Image (cartoon, rainbow, N blue to C red; front, side, top):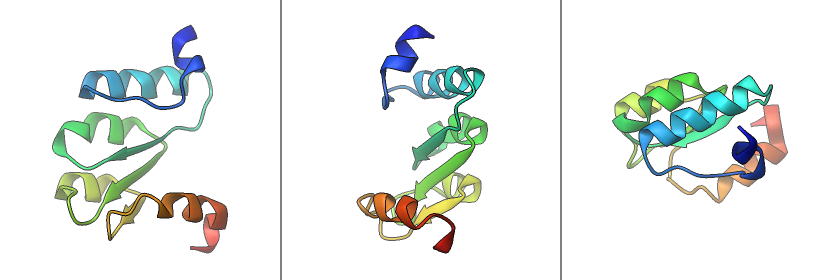
Length: 87
């Protein structure tokens, strides 16, 4: 748990991603996760906010998403969070 607080982003294996989401939620954080594949399904289900890609993302990832980035350009994520509920 101490290591999770020191990091802001990571994910290599689906288990690591899920574990990080669970640890952050236990600490009271609101957790946003990005994912594009079936292997991400568990962490996507566990997260508070889910972002996925529209072009390369799987149907499973898009169905679980709160936000689908249609052109797969994650640079737009910053703009989305700045606009908040206006988008």
